[in-house]
Image (cartoon, rainbow, N blue to C red; front, side, top):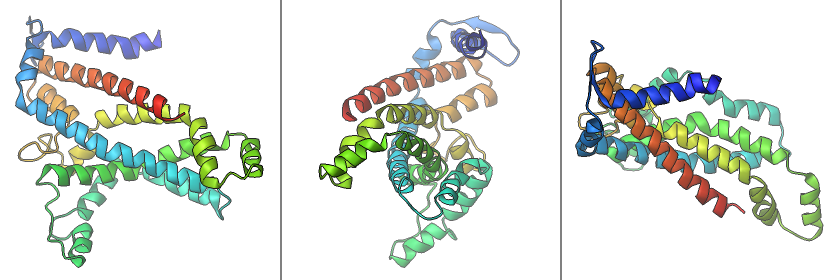
Length: 274
């Protein structure tokens, strides 16, 4: 009942709107799949798809790998383990606006700390907002900083649920810590990997707040849309240009992309982590 009201109904209604030429006055004209046809001809849509996938790859893979490393370290007998576990989740509860402001200063072209450090290595100042790869990298670092600790705690909880007897038996048999990690920890973390990968996929492909604040609140995502994500484009078309039908078509394309990438990730992780 609740899923039907909060999940299924908005999904079906968005699909219905996407089949119309729907404007701010509430008038709508049935156009069938015309919005989707226009979408496939829209160069800006393909640019936002490219941006979304690029930022997703640059942020999700390092994020999950770092989370796994952090969880492994926190699962050991370290001093002040509780304080460390609390510390890694602080970025996740920090206001995303504050995070964007801080990282905007860090990646500032003229006075940013990142460019200052690179200058010490002989690298010229980088305009992080000017190009695709530089802007994708800056946004990905921001996303990783916020969500790595969250995923690390999930991995840590799963690691602590693994029976200690397995490690003790492996140690008696002469297995090194690396071999225990590879043959015991990773296979036992398989359900957790699937969960984190799918959740990260959903969040990564719907990325909106971080790139929006990185662009100083402008949905264009740069002068040539070099870091405009699909959700930013959807918002721009629906709520700035008032093309609700076209915006709904973009929303459905995001939904289908999430389903596709989630299925691919699910099959890949299920095959790889055994």
